[in-house]
Length: 129
Image 1 (tube, rainbow, N blue to C red):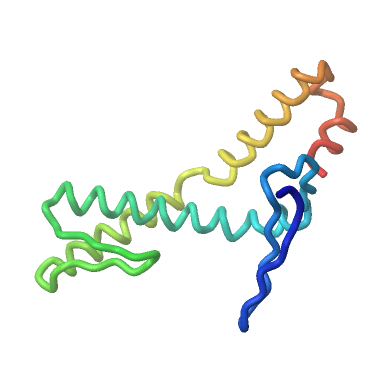
Image 2: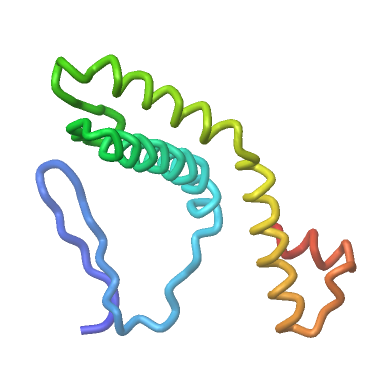
């Protein structure tokens, strides 16, 4: 049935909204607050992926959960070196500039769809709010 209903447990209350609800609010403040930790998580996962690829490329056993990486004791020094190389390589890249470009591209596409001049600073400011 459409609408909201709550499930209460001894630890928490969860409010569920049915998929039939057509007017789901966009909680802008929550979206803004979620961006930084999600972005950092994406950097962590990128670092893990690069490290895993380098370890596999050198025949090193690799396992991980979140930001905890494991290997056999005999290859620990090699993995440590690859781990640090991957970290430096990732953070030497222009991550913030790439993020800026992706935002600018998104705003440009919105302006194109709405037939608005991308150079209009007022429009660009409004779209960022």
